[in-house]
Image 1 (cartoon, rainbow, N blue to C red):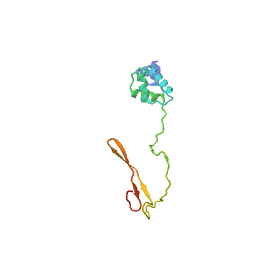
Image 2: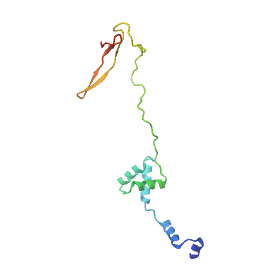
Image 3: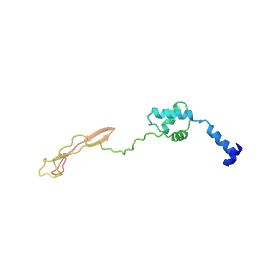
Image 4: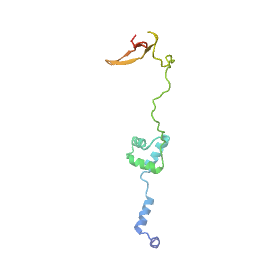
Length: 142
């Protein structure tokens, strides 16, 4: 053995250090198996945070950073949903009235064209609605 170490130009302590590291048992083997089972039970949807919580529910005490490192070394990656921007538009809802005025807001005689709009007020935690009728001839409330 001495001749081989001399030939490889490796100190004896270095050889035994690496030999010991090769024969060492994986102290996270049980946790890795559990991580794999949790990952596959949830069809790859769980990331390291949810896996950490599930491990804690199953009685393992382990830090989330350790779980993250183990998942990374195991090559597991959760499915990420594509990010969607918020869009409040829901399409056309309700009935659209016909455009009878065609932007002609002048009337030639009273009570020919009347328009309205609904306004909501909150009074004493109740909703009140006001809908005045306005004559387009002179702008009076009818």
